[in-house]
Image (cartoon, rainbow, N blue to C red; front, side):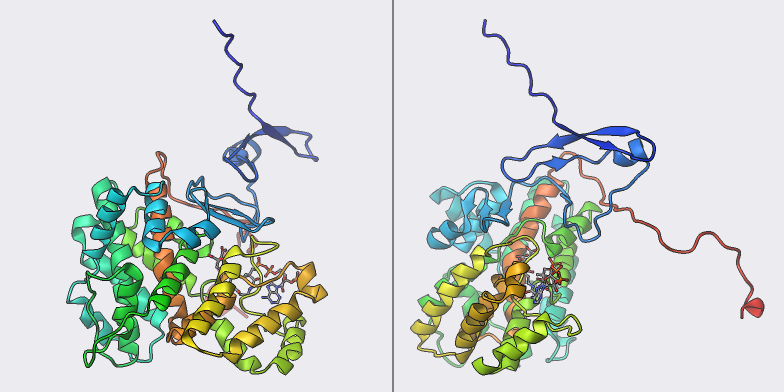
Amino acid sequence: MAKEKPAPAQKTFTLTNDQTGKSVKLPVLDGTIGPPVIDVRKLYEETGHFTFDPSFTATGSCKSRLTYIDGEEGILMHRGYTIEELTKHSSFLEVAYLLLYGDLPTQKEFDAFEHNITYHTMVHEQINYFYRGFRRDAHPMAVMCGVVGGLSAFYHDSLDIWDPKQREISAHRLIAKIPTLAAMTYKYSIGQPFVYPRNDLSFAENFLYMCFALPAEPYKINPVLANAMDKIFILHADHEQNASTSTVRLAGSSQANPFACIASGIASLWGKSHGGANQEVLEMLDEIGSIDRIPEFIKRAKDKNDPFRLMGFGHRVYKNRDPRAEVLKGAADEVLDDLGIDDPMLDIARELERIALQDEYFIERKLFPNVDFYSGIILRAMGFPTSMFTVLFALARTVGWISQWKEMIEEPSLRIGRPRQLYTGPAQRPYVPIAKRK
Ligand code: SDX
């Protein structure tokens, strides 16, 4: 009988308190690829110390099988498939299936999934009245926070997060209905009537139809735009434990319903440092206005006393390239050429990238275009106002958010997320009556 191989010894990290000389051994956990982690779950119990990592620069919050990013190499993979391959060969709905269920679907599985999503694209007619409460000039992301949060008021039949069937139908409803709500948000902002979804169109075609069709005349789908839209959705689908995904996971850890969790993700994504950057990029390029003004803005971006930053530049994880930005840079050319648009913004963006990437400040800090830098140029060419850009990001990222939420709920040991802190406030002190305060 073959001698059983001894189990590999548990890898550990020894932490020593230099003041007391006391040491603690912490287990090291390995993933499939990527950096190992030091398991600090027993640290407080064994040392009376917390870890301290306020913006989570070195903290793994969970195990996940969905997405892997190699920041040094500029690699982004979903369930092992690179973003380059997925944008070349796949579709957004197929990537949605991959993120939700773990593998690329067979034709039969895909057809069933696509049918399910298609037949959930309509929203309850009462939701139309939500929109009436907003001013027409409300920021579309404010509207989306409201209407998506309100969805849980309509789906009492799928709020039991412990029922796999209800989890699945909530995921399908969110993936299917958020494009409809996003299109309604856009239509409401421009005073045009809502356009109902059509079941004979693909996911991306249907979204463009709901945004740009008018009751007064037939709407012709432009396959170039539909293809670009689908590619943009794929590029924004999921991205490990970014700020909005971590928000969704933390909200979900308290057993909040999936609709409320996705609404919390939308709120977080809206921030200028996160998904809100795609709108900021276009506004920045608008402000720069011409190539000869680029040096003035590069100077401002480097000035510590000036809050101005080059929007669409830099990334917490990517330290050499954002593979999504490279795909979008190529797509910008294609879409503008196909549409016969000569957008001076694209020239400014390209020249800004060229100058910045030669500048010591940006090289030293490894700052270069991220996913938001080129996306806005394409979206504007497609006819979307800048205020809708982050809504489109949220539409696509809903697939990642709900897949991450589902993965977390299906973990055998779901516990509420409850970070600790380093307290720096006053020590205990006696209450002073107001008459005695100086
Ligand atoms: C997204 O996490 C994700 O995965 C996010 C995302 C996803 O798909 O979910 O990829 C989507 O959010 C992309 C990022 C979009 N945001 C922007 O484009 C806004 C502009 N970028 C920055 O605000 C910033 O680069 C962040 C927010 C993206 C990253 O912030 P970090 O990691 O906290 O980096 P930092 O602010 O500590 O900057 C490090 C240094 C600083 O200089 P020093 O203090 O060291 O001298 O770089 C400088 C910063 O001042 N810096 C910039 C800069 N970004 C960082 N200087 C000028 N312009 C910039 N854009």
